[in-house]
Image (cartoon, rainbow, N blue to C red; front, side, top):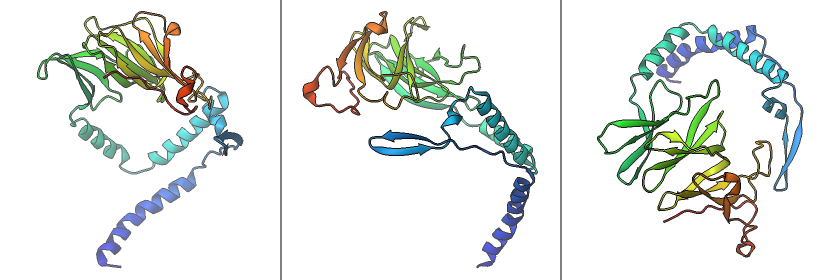
Length: 266
């Protein structure tokens, strides 16, 4: 071992010993096991901790609190932690805003922007590339204590509307809302549960295609099978949307249950 490596080990060792002694001094909460077996495409999967998914149950809430208390107790014993954390916050605030998913439609630019102080991005637009930006949609407004984010957005070809996928609590599925860009108001209809997103708008911006799951239950292991691509006309009831592509509609295509039909426009 070289002298530089020996020095590195000697420096790291006190911190390692401290972490071990701190963990030993605090009792780690126990987690019970309750096996649940599911079969996915012929393979049996055993999940010992399915019960933790019931986040509204008193038992899970108590378990989460005990884990949080244990974590805070360990972290609170680290010397200089608060000072280091404050330095990270200060340096993080110096970062520039994050701009992503820039789309140009009919001369108008749409993009998601996240400031260093924000945990989720907001939807903005500009009429020219160097013009003033306009806040179109803030997913946190009216959300209360719910974690809400923009999982996707698709502007219409004329740039007058945007289909926005709004996801709650980190879900992989979203609810589609339709934004009127000029008025900055949302149309009354909502479409859920949508997973893959919007396939595309018609040329005149009157409607769009999308893929919808078969169930809103996140525990339904079959909700991603035999999904359907629909067409939605803005201002109409989503329950009356027309199916445009599915295995049931076109059996001659030989689509499998796990195939995901998507219809887009060129």
